[in-house]
Image (cartoon, helix red, strand yellow):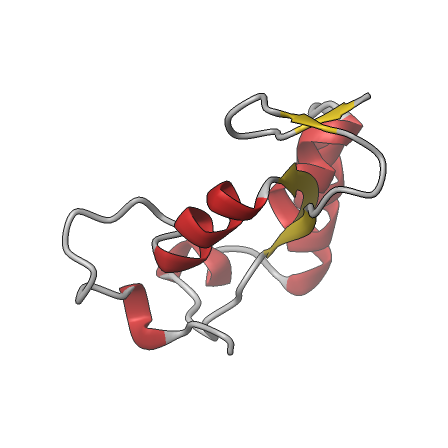
Length: 100
């Protein structure tokens, strides 16, 4: 039996439910810090490869891309869509980047 990932309500077959997909992708703003120019591009690439070898693969991937799927009941879907980030003031929208 499927349950709502937010409130735990049972969602029997044929009942209304919503699949919410959340995707986070690294966003490069085009800014390079002074440290980025400390080494030649070959040395930078070599350093990056060494740094990545020291990190677990799943952590490295999650730093670049992560996706999560949730099943919500109708009331939890409404609450989520009205305020997905649980903001105190609804007027505050970070960077105005909401996709409609």
